[in-house]
Length: 318
Image (cartoon, rainbow, N blue to C red; front, side, top):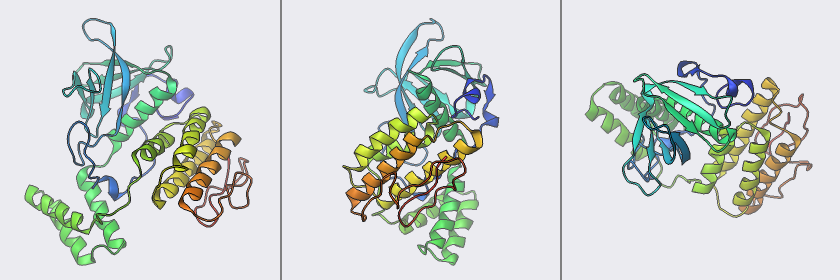
């Protein structure tokens, strides 16, 4: 089990960052050209906010515990006095993280060890929240470089017909040139091809989708899905939300089968069906099927086939 999973993997101490498994999922090129500004750190690819929330941190000199507002970006994990503070009390550069130790004897506790010798003991409210933060840090560590992301986007844009093959080769040459000016020109060319009206999921939906991808226990999955049922039934969301929801569910099903951890329970399966149905109803996509309907997600045995997207919905259970 990886750091984001429950059971033996989560309880194991001294997990080296180099051994962390790459988190599943791909936000696509939209994440590279996300134009929303982060509340702290400004706009842009490198400083975009990945996760924010309150955790309790142990002091380095006086070993007391203080509640801090933590902000995770692609390059750092910063902590602030509170949400209103403009300047951080401290910053952990992700490149300095050597290992993350999970304290099996204390619920919600984990330690970030750095190559600088300065270690950070952190306490979440519970093990689920601890797992969410560890998974988020893991994903930040494993995110591809901006260069790799832009190269991938050039390929995707050509495939989608947004740019020609010749344009893709020009952009590729500029990206691999190593010159800052050429990199800027390549990014500008890609931005021209990037449709300005690309639909964006509402922030509440985006946060819940991220949580759905990061948690790995049946109760946590059920909690997130129940909230998604409410949100998707009341907020407009692009078709990409439905695809992402189904793709994340498929990954959980595959993990549930391979690890036999029981995360994809009957209750979770039914809640997933209800979330998809809530989306379909609000978007006016035909007659949504429930957990037992012919078009919903059918069957809940470990032998069922994985989810397939299209037609009446997604199929398969573990």
